[in-house]
Image (cartoon, rainbow, N blue to C red; front, side):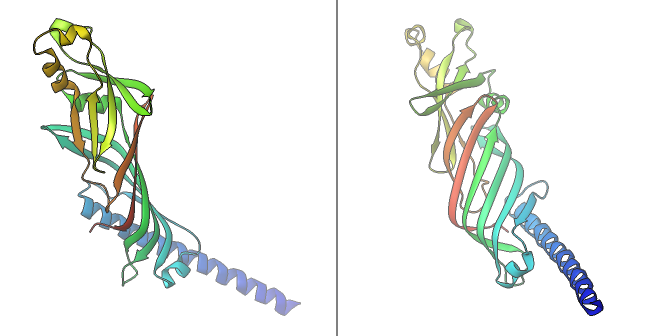
Length: 233
């Protein structure tokens, strides 16, 4: 009985040491991965990286991780001299290969991502005192309400649609203009100069491609995915 208790005690101690070593190892690789993503993406600070699955050391032995999640914080997209801020960008990498030194992540078989843009940032990016707010959805298209800044038509509001173009660009277009604007010479040109924009998001990790944009009451949500994703750095 005493020998059994001793064996159980040793087993508990060894198990605790294994768990401690496992957590130290996973934290080290998370830090290395965060530094690699920060350098590759040109971020101001390292993102929060979380490696899923336990035990970690057995995943390391096979140089393959189940899932790695990264919160990259905010990025910026530029168009026509204006900046569109994406205030939240996160990515989930699946079936992740480690580098030959086991110290950093290299690539992923697949990945998904999400991004969020506030209406305040969308308004700022449009420039010219244009205001953009939530517009709901119509016929499967995510919409916004756009209030251009035109002295002759101070109460003009138009509906605009947000779409994804080329896997890396968020496009905003006015769906149509009221008859009172179309009747005024040059009005449509002036309005569309304020409502129609393309913002290219070229700081997505790996080869993630934008797929869908959805308008919500608190901002727009963008989803992305990719295959055989090469991590930057």
